[in-house]
Image (cartoon, rainbow, N blue to C red; front, side, top):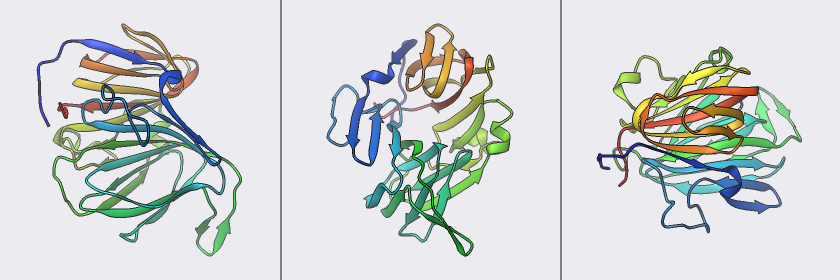
Length: 257
């Protein structure tokens, strides 16, 4: 990881320009090179390696597969996603739940839009699940695998920008969950119509509009699926459109180069 002199810039990326994967059970949009999609000029931004905007049909999902040395944060927008991993963690990820899996030295997990068990009952559903999954590199390799989640739905309903996941010491008293990366933090907000927020001040900021629209200071209007890669972020303000907005913003103080 490196720190470097940066030139102020706002690089807006439109939703329709993302890589896309479409199969019978999955509709996925990739902000960066992913899987069979590769662009050497678009492999990451700062410490953020993956930002996938996924819709998984009922009964579908990602079967058990491995990860290593990655901090994986999943943010559900609608529906529910069943998580299970080789460390014995299981749970249902739903809107308003902050969730992180540390792959560390190696972990197997599955993520499915499937029936799930609550107490002694099985809940069936037929709705799609829509979520954003984001990967950042850890600051230390081969740590113990781990899992953490916390429901912050009530706090999100206040319409303010919240620290969802962070490894930065300055967020120790306000973050919902931790990540093993001391130079990065994920912020999120559900903005009411006309609601405003200020993005973090940081060398690198990645803003993703998960739904709705926002007017970003100095960049114009961003709609659902659009993103902005900001270098030398100066706390730019944004305001939500008439339908409100849900936004995810990574604050980063280092880069992979």
